[in-house]
Image 1 (cartoon, one colour):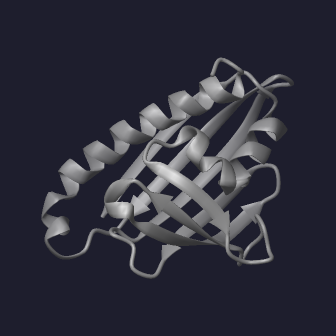
Image 2 (cartoon, helix red, strand yellow):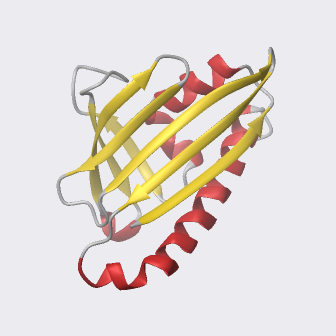
Image 3 (cartoon, helix red, strand yellow):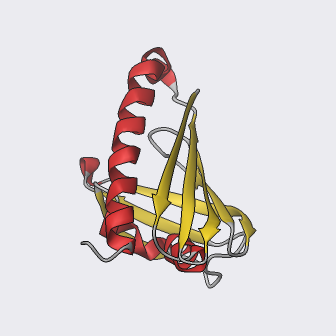
Length: 145
């Protein structure tokens, strides 16, 4: 199992950050390697909603399902189908002041097959990529991008 936690301080109101994060169609704007994301169900941002995310890596498409939502605070998703590494992701936003917030992400993955042997290297790579992505997210939300 891999588990990565990343925390980022963002100078925008919590509701702005959450609205942006909860709309997964924004993922390609700040997540490296994400080509596009599209909702595949009529639900959007609600428990049970599904979406597909196209990745640059091997032209892969990964499907996700929203598993939990605490409106304005957190959203959790899990990969479904044939993901390279089955993954659960929780993004949470907490206000710091009226105009700033803390964004937290927890990623839990379950490598299969031989990938299980490389879980430390995978964890390190996921942490590094996530830290970069959330730095881009911060810049994007703060209007620096």
